Amino acid sequence: MAKESNAIELLKHDHREVESMFKQLDAEEEGRGKIEIAQHICLSLIVHSTIEEEIFYPAAREALDEEDREMVSEAKVEHGSLKQLIDEIRGSNAQDEMFEARLTVLKEYVQHHVKEEENELMPAVKKTELDLDALGEELMQRKETLMEQYRQYEGGNGSTVKLPPASKRASKSGPSSKSTGSKRAGSNRATTKRSTAKRASSRGGKSGSSSRRSAQR
Image 1 (spheres, rainbow, N blue to C red):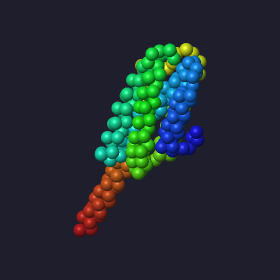
Image 2: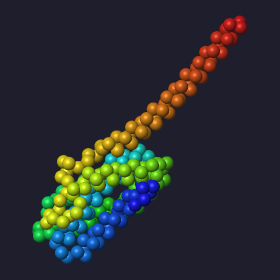
Image 3: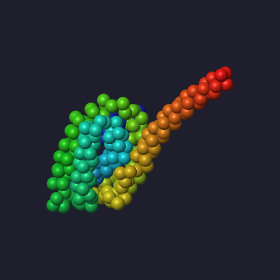
Image 4: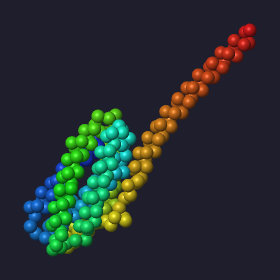
């Protein structure tokens, strides 16, 4: 995945990767193979949902108008359902009664979520003035950090699905989100300072002109 890809392209690439993994899961017949693929799917979804919630969704909410912001709220609610199901899959094995059923429902959840994001939310975001290239770089950096953080869960060669427990996953208000917010706030403060300086300069100029006129009289 090219690091210079913009935010929309990066997130869509993630979607395609997960769709491909679900196809592999459907074709897999051996139990250990199912565990490995299920682990990759769940880990990819954990990382993907984290970078969306920390970076993409806050930026989208800020850029969209009030009516379209509801799509961001709905997407976050859908993430909650996905995470709950992933937590139920964590620790299970291919012989568990609900293993196949949970993965089938997870696949359906993901398909619905992807369809709404790509057909509604992303087109709306593309119409805004949001810098998608810069946002894409930030998403990629955070994704790489998370993948390194969860490296111990890669491989999936055990008998159960091993995933980071919810308590050890990155919070929604992670460092990237704070950094993004700080940059935006800093930009706003800089604009305010420039405006204040211009007004002060203008008042100073007027005051000087008045003083000169008084001295001439």
